[in-house]
Length: 481
Ligand code: NAD
Image 1 (cartoon, protein in one colour):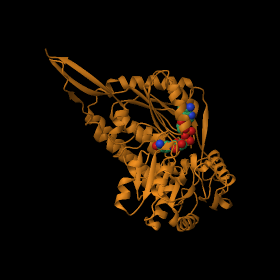
Image 2: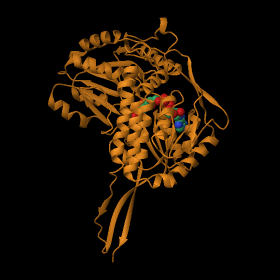
Image 3: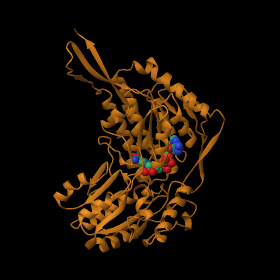
Image 4: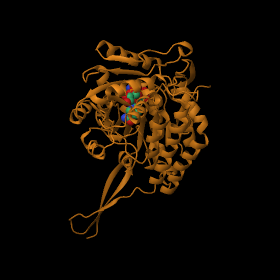
């Protein structure tokens, strides 16, 4: 595969320095492609190209309907190229082909279609001020140039969740995918241009953290929308303070799962296993801390460990695969480090806890791992592992389970398993999380907001909430006196 390039304005170009990076297939450890490693000069060029694109007549004069049509066309192109995009996402990220084909790619298309509809519905308000002789109204204005920095776990979707509302509201964007998984974002940008997004309105910078840092520090960028780790989110906030650019943050998670005494255990086992191991646990909303009523915990542990052992581990390209590789060698080492700390700190390993060998030994495969006798203070109960590791903890009553579920810095997602209507409706408002699921997997839909409390982030993506993230509100006072 030839090295991928940067998109700056109208031109696909190599990095100004000629530098390249490499992305690896996590199922084999082999190099998949080279990508252009942007330099600070490329960041400057992309920001000025985006400014020109934002101010261009070609973009400004588009009617909301025409802007919506372009977004709709991007959705169509994603679907027309769905098989190729799914294969690309699977080879670069490692996710099972069933996930990329049936979740990642269709969800991105759905997101563009959802925000295509919003382009014609960005209404303002009339304000009943008490000053005589005034007609006062508000309108939404695009922010200008937005930097969209994404992680490696769902590269295509997360780019779509940012780009679609950014364009629907009339901004110009610079995408910066993760260095581990740039390839599907390169294709997304190509498809956006093919759909008719004018030159300069979408730009692409590939490369590592230095590229992200330069974007965050740049005075010509009006907003950074970032999805990634909490530590980097904190760095971004510090770096953005100088310019006071807007910052949106979708950060880490450590979702609790509360299994009530009355839960349907078989449904809870299957739902929790899928919720824990979706994309090999590399999902910010993955279920990780399992609070199970003491009377049901033995049955739960036995069943979930047996089900975890039975899952097919393999390359994402194999349609039978349920558990694919972890995304990189570094991440594999990190996950194993957490498992080692669990054992050292006294948790009981029920199954897993090791890298997969044999014919999969060159890929970054890790066995689904189940721990019991985990306490709230252990590292595996506190830190985001972002891998296939389940920690099971018994509790005595629901008040205790809720208090322990909330005993975390994170607050992205949570799940409750119960057959009691009162428990189902009364627990969510006692749980500190941006999304609470009841009796199901972690789901994401463009129609519902997604985001976190606490150290899981600032702001919301998806739904009408995302429109606020990409617009300024402007008041206009007209003197009628
Ligand atoms: P990461 O924070 O290491 O990197 C994310 C992106 O930021 C990459 O593109 C990287 O190059 C860039 N970057 C790194 N340092 C930077 C800096 N100082 N300034 C600017 N950009 C910088 O995250 P990751 O390891 O790629 O992704 C995993 C993390 O993402 C997990 O913590 C996970 O929970 C989180 N995540 C959150 C959500 C959500 O919706 N809340 C969704 C997916 C992933």
